[in-house]
Length: 201
Image 1 (cartoon, rainbow, N blue to C red):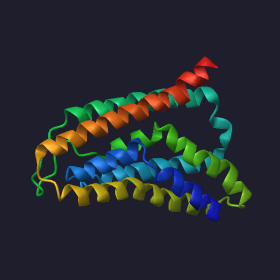
Image 2 (cartoon, one colour):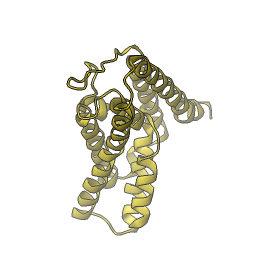
Image 3 (cartoon, one colour):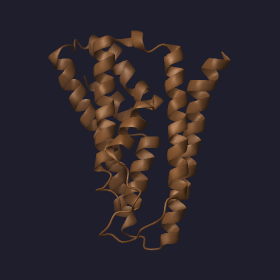
Image 4 (cartoon, rainbow, N blue to C red):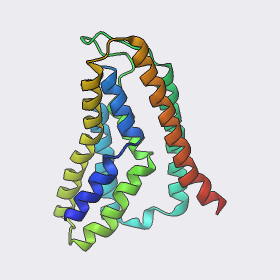
């Protein structure tokens, strides 16, 4: 059981596209506005845990993972471009117009190969090894989905704490561009690892 939690925390809380967007939202004073985004991430993880746990690994073949990876890369690049062009609002009483929503979190996590990498071993290997099935599988899936909500949420909190100490819009613009570049790098890395290499093999 501790192995399941250790693996889930290690995969979910390391920097990735979802957590970087949470950090950026916090830096731009959109921490509260991005709650829907975090809930979307958790909902996607819940769905993945339940699907893989109840149906098994038979659904996820190499070709399907490649398609999901390609779609995920395209979506991450879209978000990176959107972030690079986003305006900066310093007014703390009013969130910026480009706040992340539930749909953004749901789609990003469903199309994020890291989500599959996080859920597949747990649902198809660790759950059965620990005798977790039926109602227990649903309870564990809900608990792990709540942990998934906390991942971008904690990054948003850190961003909000840092953002309060920064008042220059140019710095926020720089953060936006840096995050956009990081997201583009993540998309290229995912594309190479989960799309190019399987197709080239």
